[in-house]
Image (cartoon, rainbow, N blue to C red; front, top):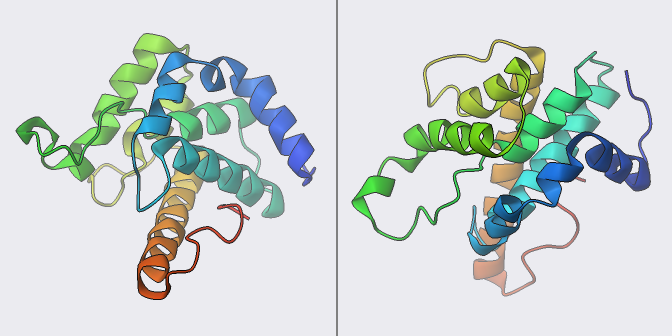
Length: 170
């Protein structure tokens, strides 16, 4: 169980368990895709990961930290612009978890827990519930971050104020 809360320890955890993922070409490509407003898919993936780690730490939930981190970082590893109008990207919300898992399996070694995190993070939109506590944590963190990101985007449109007043996931 991890109890450290500083940003440097979170960064250390990410590097320790997923340095290969963070440095990969695919993760860098995520920076090109918009997600939930003004942020990128990469920003969202980092936010979900940080929130997932903090949730596990603060609630003192015993987790496989490597699987939690790798699954959270790769939960939206679909690697396409789902807003491009292409018919194959219709129903993105229902289909992207499967595509993310295919891409992640192709590019990285994954535990069964990390695979479950990726393929089931869209529950209840996708009907199969998570199997592991790590998957439930990421599922909740994903929803919270998506609402934060979308809300900041809407507030920016309404007020003209900057969309991000701080780091998502704080």
